[in-house]
Amino acid sequence: MHEQLPTSSSDHLSESLDDTDLADSLALGTTDDPQAQARVDVGEQLLAHRTTAGMTLEAAASAASIDPEHLAGAEDGIESLDEPEIARLAGVYGVDTTAFFGGRVTPFSYLAGA
Image 1 (cartoon, rainbow, N blue to C red):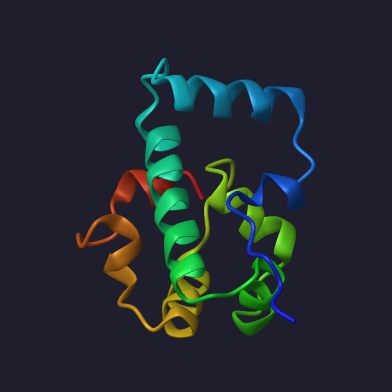
Image 2 (cartoon, rainbow, N blue to C red; image 1 turned 45 degrees about the vertical axis):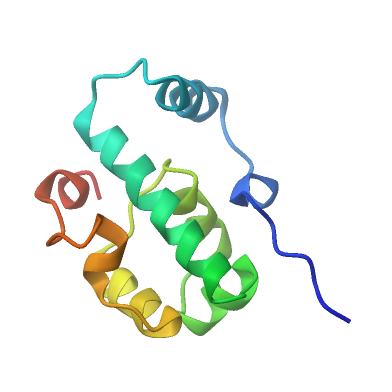
């Protein structure tokens, strides 16, 4: 039996009203906070690579030794992962760490928000 992969990690994360408002603003492109936008961009890549790897959020989090709610928050663009967490996920997904940042070196604006 195959488990259906979620298309969004929102099902796994209890968000506060402020987080939901921020996520809605980012989705609509109505924020000019570069750190928040970087989190959303990276989150989209995290989700895409997890889906490509055919992993559930829980399996990926477990394999990378990351709390599932923290990974869900990162995929939703609400939280930032630190460099060791990013490196572990890259190893789990079989990609270079730059894959989460559009092939570029980790942007400081993303890390500064961590």
